[in-house]
Image 1: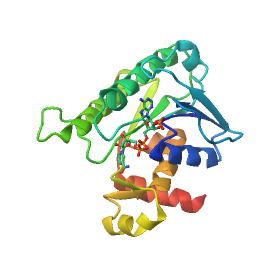
Image 2 (image 1 turned 30 degrees about the vertical axis):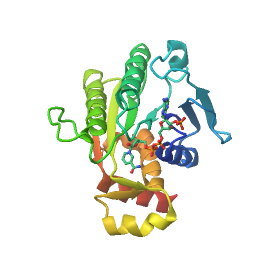
Image 3 (image 1 turned 135 degrees about the vertical axis):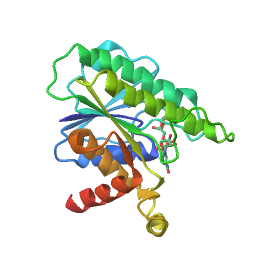
Length: 221
Ligand SMILES: NC(=O)c1ccc[n+]([C@@H]2O[C@H](COP(=O)([O-])OP(=O)(O)OC[C@H]3O[C@@H](n4cnc5c(N)ncnc54)[C@H](OP(=O)(O)O)[C@@H]3O)[C@@H](O)[C@H]2O)c1
């Protein structure tokens, strides 16, 4: 099974990449990045993208057989392109390619969002709301894409709380509990599982489910 990843060079995307490469049912991982990956692996194909606002049909049609994509591009500062425009550009281009192909199952779009991201665009309480509102717009666009193209597209919006990447943060994760924090490896394992096996999972998934299922997946591996 082939899986696509955007943002595989990032803190969370690199965990999604590691866990996808380790997943027994994933036979090929294709990454879309703006710089080369410092990793070689027999399952890995890395594609450099110059402009994430433009997704040529000939690039995407080669990957219309993928189970789906794990989308991990995003900013912490509220960047219109990174937090909204790039993901929408990909979705709109990919769904056109998929609509023209016959598939057995819908393309699964796993969209990295966050616990504090909100979809209510009317609120504007303080300057720090900007990143969350932009991400909220992109969550809404991803969910609407699945409604409009139900046969071809399925969206999972993944909303982790704090993501810990270092072993010394383990105590903090434990103290914060499953509603608030998750280890990067657990999140990576959960997103890899979701893109290939997510048919029973909700469209919007909270930290609690990510942490508990992610832990179980790592124990079973
Ligand atoms: N860490 C947390 O606790 C947490 C929790 C919930 C949600 N989130 C959200 O998850 C997202 C990813 O987090 P992260 O820690 O993985 O971030 P990160 O390490 O900064 O990774 C961001 C990714 O986006 C890519 N990117 C940045 N600018 C780009 C551009 N102009 N064109 C194309 N790609 C670009 C980066 O590529 P390069 O490597 O080439 O720069 C990288 O792959 C963020 O939006 C964050 O808000 C984080």
